[in-house]
Length: 284
Image (cartoon, rainbow, N blue to C red; front, side, top):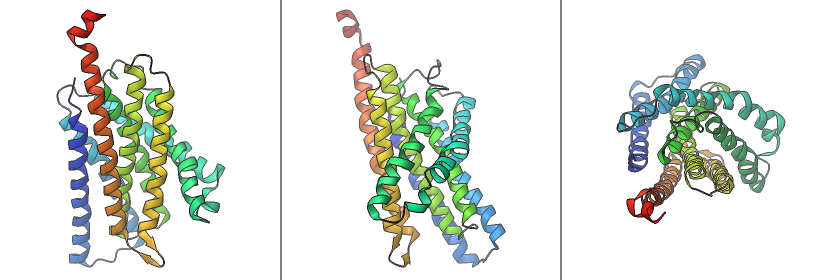
């Protein structure tokens, strides 16, 4: 069984690497003092939307050397997550529920809408991307596989959300685009890892039933909603707008989630080792 520590180590290094990426973008802007047109801003904003996801996928895959997942499976799930975000996630949230018409009216409406509408829909679609593709296959044969595949789906989902954000704001500023894309990508990867853990629980723990999976989707949705609320709260205070607060808050939330997943994985590995040990088999 592959060590679960890959999740924590890759997550930590990924957070640090992407923060450095944002700092490099800020340094370039300071040194060059460029004032690009909207078209150039959109172009670079889209690049920033894609870089965090691809960086994470390549880095994670390089560390997953003992028994790597097929590249076409991982990338296929990534693309499916992106497709579900584009074709269902964003249209349903915006057009069916019309969240932009009421989400920002009251603080309670914002956090409840972020959890019960945005969070539930987004996390359920990430679950669908795994449950009806790789979940029944032989490639989904270890607990950590759930986290790997679910995270790939979450990254695909986040990439489309990032592109929508950049295009709708006309590119915004380079640093703001970079911060948003990095934080959003890390957040959706961490939410998805929760779903992946509980998907593996349902598959590998005898008699688990479907309740853990429902619980996992709800927990991921709650974290999603809290994340959106915190981002808005810390980034916009009165008339002041500070995207760096968003980066700090996002990193803290993601670190907490990865810590929770690490503890869950430790417990799962211990249970699996006990179940498959020679002494346990003799008792059976």
